[in-house]
Structures are given as structure tokens and as C-alpha cells.
Length: 269
Image (cartoon, rainbow, N blue to C red; front, side):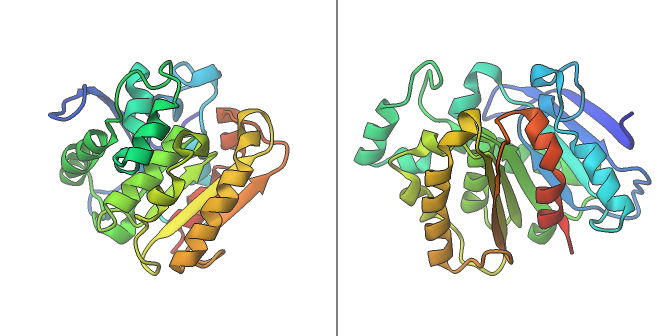
């Protein structure tokens, strides 16, 4: 049974993107007099309720976070699950700015239109997050709104948009969890994407991948990303980690089994 308290905001309005639900999970013992860090997560329908989650399996993120809090590993933390917009998911999660160049436009043209029916719209999605969702959360709940207490995480395309969010808004997000990052979507513009990384020293980046099914494509891209991340000055094991999980596939079940690892890395004191 899910501990804590889950609140559902239906059809959260926006001037930037179509409305969609936003779920807020408050940890057990939540006290308005004791502000909490906040973890923003994409694909919110896959986080808490198996009846809504893809394949009937959630991330189990609230359960994992509850265990980590009970063990004193991480502080009480609020989770904000922003639902994806269905057929617009790729448009909203594909990093937009790296595709602005001529080479980027050529790379964009190579993406299957079945996945990307229109131009990337991730800049508008991020404006939705940072100018509409985050202010609402900070005004409605007892949060620690500062960068060092604000994190963002997702899987697959959600991993890409988490990385992009921190690159675009480094003063708002202190860490990004990029789980099974779908690097092939930025094939051809990966260096341009990582050129936007903020200077090392104030942020944390978590990356991982499995070796089965879709995840089997990711290792060479992740190796390239790791070289570029290290070149900027990030230190493996300190403010950036990359984990390989042999035998893990591309599924909520696989992410559930290891979600405690990015949670610990991002949220630890």
C-alpha cells in the first residue's frame, strides 16, 4: 500500500502546453512547518498507480523513497509527477535547442514521424514546468524552493528532457536523474546538447542504462556523453555517476528495481 498522501490535480492549466494532470506525493509525516526538497518527475501516470502505469507496473518511487527516508539516507521529499501528453510526448521531451542548427535540422529529419509528428516543443514544456508548475507547488506546499533542493528525473525520453531542463535552467534545478536515457533521439547533436552543461561544482547528474532490448543501444552514446561530461570538469562518483545494469531491459519494472540508486545520489545530503 502506498504510504504518504497522494494528491491529484486534474487538467493543470497552462499558457504553454495542453493541460494535463499533475500528481503530488507528500511523504508520511509531512508538516507544513518543515519544508521539504522537491523531486519533479516526467511521465507522471507511471509513478504511483499500477492501474494507470504503462504495463501495469509503476516506478515504485514513493515506496523506495519511504524506505530511504526511514533509514535516514535521504530527507523527507515531495514528488511531483507531471503526466505526459500522450502523442505529444516526443515533441515535449526532445531537447529543442540542439536541433536549431542546419546539422540539427538534418538530424531532426531522420527521426521517424511516427514518434515525432511535429517540431520539438520542449522549450514550451519547460516553461510550463518552471513558470507554472513549480511556482504553484512552492506556493501550495511546504517546499525548499532553492536550486540545491530541487531535482528533476525521468526515463528514456524523460531522461533526455531531465538533462535538458537542468542545462536550460541551472539556477532552478540542482540535479538531474536520467534513467535509461534515449540517446539515439539526439544522434548527431549529442555534443551540441552537452555543450550546454553548466560548469561543474553546483549540480549532480545521474545516468544509467541496461543491456537488453532498447537499452542495448545506449552504451556507445553514454560513453560519448561520459567523455564530454568529464571534459567539462564533472567528477565521476562525486557530482556525476553513470551505472550499467547488465540484464536490465527498458521497462518500469527494471526502473523500479533500481530507482533507490538515483534517489540516493540526488537527494543525499
